[in-house]
Length: 222
View 1 (spheres, rainbow, N blue to C red):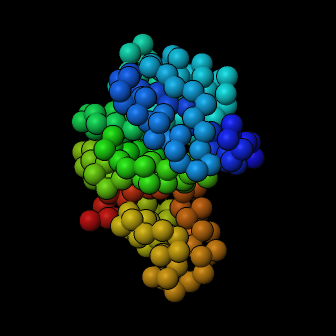
View 2: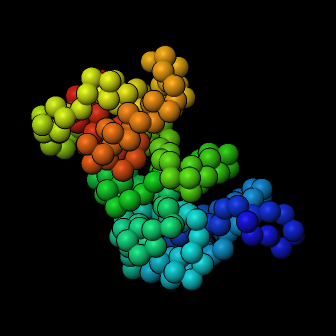
């Protein structure tokens, strides 16, 4: 654990990338007030963001989708390829659902709208750093709608899943955590984690956000 200048413990190091100075500076101030969080760099475009990630190796990059020189999708892809120790959370007001799906495919771990409060942002950053996905309600609905417009999942991709794995997938799509799924199915949380790992491996899924899209495309979720 690092130490911040005031002596407090720092367990989450963040780089921010947003081309709007007001938003960027506001995020720096906001995150700087959160306990255990240190903003180690702020960039106005994707090129500078990648340089800062290479220099500081933060736990998370908080990135806007629309930026000059290099957009958020390309930045996400490059960060995940070159610096796998840095997770990416997308913060956006952008309404292009295809860009959200592209960012998901590029490796973004979380998605937030720019009106998210400090608690939601902190939760998303910490979840991402822990390898977990976070998608706020509005963006999850948009991702689902965009995913259902894409080609459906092939039958053989679903046929490889067991009945229990499909049940777990349906509950993931409903927004339940592993603890809640365990309670619903009356099994241990360790058993749920095993089912999740198996279905992710079989379906080629990286995280819960991809699992939600997969479930809707496969017609498993309503």
